[in-house]
Length: 360
Image (cartoon, rainbow, N blue to C red; front, side, top):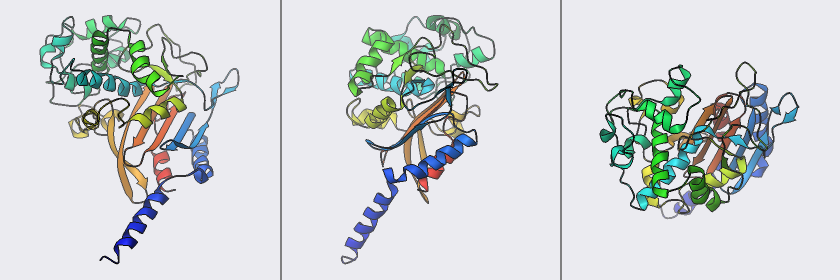
């Protein structure tokens, strides 16, 4: 066995090395991406990296069809619910600074939120989508709630709804819960949510092209196209504080994903909490993309193909909005990063992309 040990070590090193993508794979990846674009499965930008080493980035389709302006790798795009990762980090920073406990009821921190069950819903329930609160966004889509009202008005209205299930007993993705988390962050950091994001995440990581916008449009941003081909119309409250809504770039999100698991943002103890599988697909109350994988705090916790015949742990989050969809993920054991955005509504992360890359 001693004589075989060096062979095993060399074999393992070879396997690890061959699993890593290099810039020599650029053309193979581009062939995959070009086919996905030709098949109508992507319309935006893609970045693929091995740690700090960007292997591939490219953009597809038009940022403005009328003006014939193409999407580029520098285009700023709305990240939608991918911003829930930011919120979860800000909440865990409050935990590290002893402002909160995960078992605290939201009534302790937000006494103005007058839901009859606020004393039974914990911060843990909000982070892991186990609160039982109704999702304000679905109430809006069903025409039961106005799109053109402020965050506090939204929460005032949602406080009148009965719970869908007992807190902690099921898994149901809930934007309302992340608005409440945003309110808790603003209370203890005593500042606007955008300023808190800038000071505690964006500036620290050098994310100089990321900002929270009052509109889906902004400098260097694309037009977003609905499924019927028409342009989405921005509205006054196109974002709220906590459930997403920032605009960013491929390069800035690469910086953010590099920081996942590092002590730049959180302690290792907090990352362990964030990446734990708190909610499982079998507990989901409805079929929905965010329910197809286990959920931690502000992130999905997945086993995804990494190389032929193997899979590994990946952390990520998707997002979708009016004419947009996106996803960012990081393979924790290997530091492979994939970021993808569309400026028309498509699958946030085509499974064909992940599967094809794993075969390289």
